[in-house]
Amino acid sequence: MSDHVKIGTGTWIVVADGEKALFLENEGDDQDYNFRVRRIEQQDNPPARDQATDAPGRRSDGPQGHYSAMEPTDWHEIGKERFARDLADILYAQAHKGRYDRLILIAGPNILGEMRPNLHKEVRNRLAGEIPKTLTNHRLDDVEKIVRSELGPG
Image (spheres, rainbow, N blue to C red):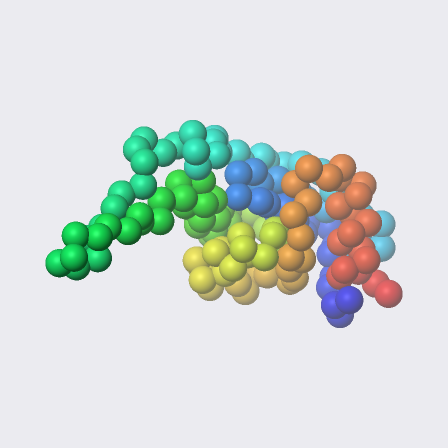
């Protein structure tokens, strides 16, 4: 359990996975959360098998005439990484416009790991906490409970 993080009125809570992001705003206060959806971002990212065009390539192992299969490109995973970078850009644009002062990021560890190095200093300065969980398909009241248990007052 993390230290208490102030999640007052106006705090943004971004709940993301590799294909969908919910931009929530706390309309309640630090004791009584009331998250409301302000924006939804989604990308169409079909499974890798539906994005591949050919069988994996083969490479020569040397003069003996042996060939090894090459690892196929995981276009689905690349799409998730691109979506995480795009979210970092959206958060910067919104911070620059003064749309939020405090931010909580909730995403799976891989998505958080992809986002962190891409967060602009202006966003990092507003970042109040992170929760490394995938909650995009949870109900809002469940997200509120999880945020309270992870970051809220003890």
